[in-house]
Image: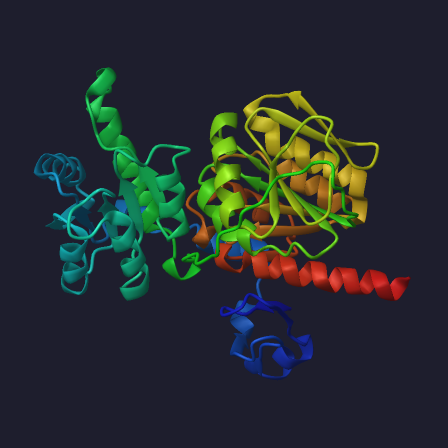
Length: 413
């Protein structure tokens, strides 16, 4: 049995005989020496764990559970009123407090104990991003950014996700004839989704800034290819993962997203500012290089030809992740690694199966840590997954596997 340390994410192997002899076994993490405890009840298949994770607060609400308590934070009285009316129109939710700026919101946290928070960015006294940092330190609470600045592809959106926000939305508006009823439904849906994410699996990312120049001409050898599928909710999942992947290993990483190309372009530029590893937008004709991560957008069908050359063709959005994983499984066989993160559909499920068939290794994000749970649930139900871990632990789990795998290859030589 494998157990990942909650503190550092290191992979620890638990001797199977220990759980046969006793109900629980305590030991120290091999890296940080944190005390870990594993019990017989934890020894479950990935499918069992995944199906257990399907029990979310959203389902509990529909069966007559307590209403979701929401704190609305915005300096505009009009927006606070609109949001409160929209949220209050759903009988499964109640607005338990309103705040005009971040400091007031922080003062209310311990008193009203909200289940989820809506948070603006531009506010007096204390802005939204500063407030978010304090929330994640003082009392981690699922937070949805609702601001004029939180558009897809915006730096402020990526900043919010980096600091621990679960999701983002623009403010409700009638501009350009937008339907308020549709906007209300989307706000309520996002609050439900956010409330189902376990906050102990959310990482508040602290990082240094890097000034790098991307260069496709410098190629470094690689042994493993890690194919990553990040569909709906992918920005936050990848922000939890990519900055913590090791660049000093003979590995190349390719992540396929379900976002438009122009937004993935912006995301690549953002990641390069604080990721030690080089991040590239994937390009037709480029060659894979070790210690590098490539990002593909929706509709970009990625194939690996002649061993390491990238070939891009147009494809439907629904098969972006599947095609990437199928190609990686064909070109890298047992050295292929497949990673399924958050998602709301089936794209990636069959592709990961191809990697497993070829003897590769599978990682799936634990559904309780996902904004959208369907893809990891379907994957874990269909296959015997090698590693089912939370988003917070995913980078450490992948790093530990790759280090161990590299060591095994050296020994075989």
